[in-house]
Image 1 (cartoon, rainbow, N blue to C red):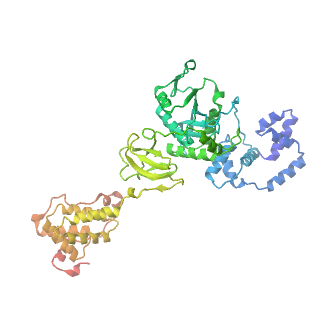
Image 2 (image 1 turned 30 degrees about the vertical axis):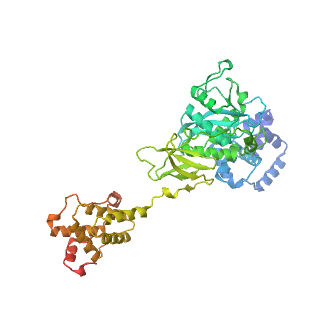
Length: 522
């Protein structure tokens, strides 16, 4: 709905006796807009509209993008739109109020209204720095990729009560007590220390019951609390005021991060979540404190208890990809060749040390380290240890050296195989497989004759070597091998190459070569 239609509708509804609030609700605009339009007569309204069209605004270049988001998801908040802009256009520098005003103007111009649900909390005093963190769980449905189907995700989130510095971790299944303990360790590592007290809801993973003030924790979690020695504060049921900060964080994560965001895989989702925390969740000015949590956290971190993190049995897990790498914080890190197993899912365990070194282990309870890498702060990089690269040239050289030792004249055989390598660098592995198979099925005398003849006639090919062997054995049938001698490597038998025909020489040509007809050799 354009501004003029809005103006005329306001005039019409007011004449019909509707209140300011009722007019705003019917037209999906704010009461301030109603007041502003009512103060203008038709001539003033026309002049104002003409002047407003001439102004170019900072976000006009992203207008179609923002409008597309609003039309697709009418309940998007301005804060969420600001985060999406920063995520997709990192060079955007724009203030909160600019985005709010621009989004409001688009809603007003195109008649895109949004229903706001508010929940009220009683204010509670902020505890001192390093004193308290609040913990809670959440779940929500998200869209799977570009499809219309939805899947359910679960998350646990922590917030330091003084600085409002947050941490969140996601799973595609319900949390177990072990998952909760692991998440605590990673949260403490993310915070740079441990607070004195943690506030929880009465969750079955943590507590059995409140028991009139004598809190009974689950056996596994009680063991962890005893080990870490932090105080547990369990909220009473239906008492959101005692942990209002974390209640707000759960809603904030659902609405600002998860809502309308496509889900591709859990690893990428958690990486995006950490990016959102740095950029928006901890990077934006908090509405209550009027400070950025990431800045206040630098001060609060000094008041957290310094702890040594559990390294053996609590660790980040990753699945090894088929290129023998794992993904971590938007980068790929290599593991030794052969770690990936095509027949089974290979899980490895990650640790980040205080020196910002990434350690990749075979098992969480093992000291076997697969790889160590410096942690990269870049995005989209491949961090690869030189020992994890397959040295193809070294493997071929060793194969040629080993095979040449099986011939009567090793030096002559080595020179011949190196010539074959020069002629067929891309297919040397197939060439060597053919020669290796022939060598194991024929006597040394035939091999020596064939090798000598191929060198003299410059026949540097595994197929030439095989054909010469055939001619020699036809002249001496007693030395014929079994029917299954001749080998064709699988790589050149595939259907994709079945239509390709290689140039071949007839056996008559090799016969003429044996008779000394030099002119027949091209």
